[in-house]
Amino acid sequence: MLTRKPYSFFLALIGSLFFASVSQAAPDPSDGILEYLQSVPGMEVEELRNPPTDYRYLLLRYEQPIDHRNPSRGTFKQRMVLLHRSAAAPMVLATNGYDIPVNTYRYALTRVLGASQLKVEHRYFAESTPVPQDWRYLTIEQAAADHHRIVQAIRPFYSGKWISSGASKGGMTAMYHRRFYPNDVDGTLANVAPQSFGRLDVRYSLFQENVGSAACRNDLKQYQRQLLTRRETMKAYIQNYAVENSKTFSMPLDRVLDLTVGELYFQFFQYGDLANCAKIPASAASDKELFDFMVAWGPLSSMDDAGLLQYEPYFYQAITQLGYPSLLTQHLRDLLKYDPNDYSAYVRAWPRQRFDHNAMWDIAYFVAQATTNTMMIYGDIDPWTAAAFFMPNSTARNTRTFMVAGGNHGADLPALNEQDRQQAYGMLEQWTGVKPIAPPMMLKPESIGEESEEFRLRRPL
Image (cartoon, rainbow, N blue to C red; front, side, top):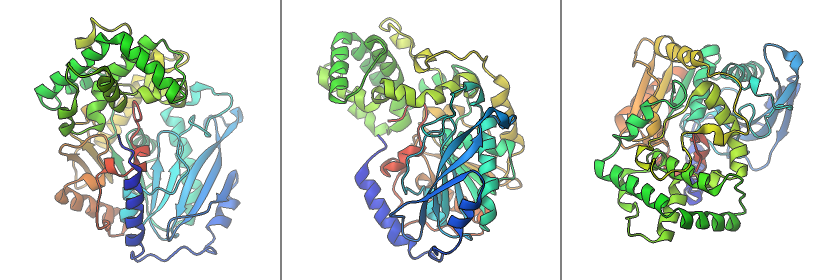
C-alpha cells in the first residue's frame, strides 16, 4: 500500500529543514494574496492555520458554471487548496482527478522547485459536485474549462511560471487541460497517466500476461483460484471484515468477492514490487492468510457502499469517455459467478450516452503531434503503462517520456535514475527559470505517505 504515515512525517521534517535554505523570500502576510483572492468574483477564501515553513495555507472555493457552454444552467463551488510561497515563485497547478484532502502536503515537483502549489478538486467529486448531479456535464471538456477559469482568475497575481502536474487520473486531467487550453501553463509533468481507447481496452490484458516472471504470474493466478475455491469461507471473512471496519456492502457478497479477486491481479503489479512475488500465499496457506493477502492487495476496502459512491464519478467517466482496462480473468471463468469486467457494479445507473470514441483519439493526436514542454513518467511493471500516451521524445518540442525500471503506479521524479532525473531537472529549469534542487534524501513515491492521493486510478488502496 502507498500510505505509510511515519515516512510522511519524516519526509515533511526533512523537507522543511532543507527548503528553509532555498533562496526564496518567506511569504509576507501583507503581500496581497489574500486581498487579491478576495477581490476575485465568485471566490471564497479562508486562511488556515499551521502552514508549512515559508508558506501561507489557503482554502478556496470558486464558483464555476455547471455547463461552460451555457452558464444559465447554474453553478457549483469548486474546492481548492493553495500553498502560497511568493508571487515570484513557480506555481504547480495540481490537477487532481478526484476529491482532494485539505492538507499541506507538497508534491515532489513542488518541493524540488520551491514552488507555490494550487491543488484542485475535480468536478463531481466530494464538495465540488453540482446539484442536481446531472452527469451530462461530467466531461473532459467541461473539466478543462474549470481549470482554464481558475488559471484566468489566479494567475494574474503571479509573475512566476506555471507547471501543471498530476498523477494517474490527475495526469490525464492535466493533459486534457493542455489539449483545450495549451497556453494556460508553461509546462506539464504527467505521471503514470494512461490513454485508454474504449471500454475493455485489450492492451491491458496483454500486458498482464507478460509482466514480471512466469512463475510469479502463475503463483498469483493459483492464489486467485484458491480464494474462489474457498468461496463460502471468504464470504464469511468479508462479513466479519464489514462489522470490524463499519462497512456496508449492499452488493451480493458473491459479487464483492468476485470483483475483488478479479481486480487483485491488476493491483498486485499496479502498487507492488516484484519482490512481493515471494509473499504470495501458497495453496496450502490458511484461510486467514489468504484473506489477509486479499485485503492487502485487492480493492475490498473501497468496494463498500461508501467507496462506490465516492468513486462513482470516475467510473461514469470511464464508461462514457475515458475508457477502462480489460482484466485478466480467463483462468477464473469456471469459478466466477460475476464478471469482474462488468462495470455496471460501480455506477447506480448505466449511462445513457454511447461511449465517445472521438474524445480520447483527439487527445492522443494532440499529445503525439502538438504538445510542447511536456514530461511523462511511467513504471514498467504498472499495468496502466500498457496504455501509456504516445509522445515522441523531441528536443524541438521539449517533450520526453521517462520509464522507471521496476517502477509501479507510484513512479514520479524521485524514482528516476540519476541520468533521467538530471535531464528532467534541466527541462524544468528551462520552463521555469528556477534550478530544481532535490532534498538530501529522495524517498521512493510508495514510501511518501500522503502522496498516495496523487495515484488513485481504478481502485485506491
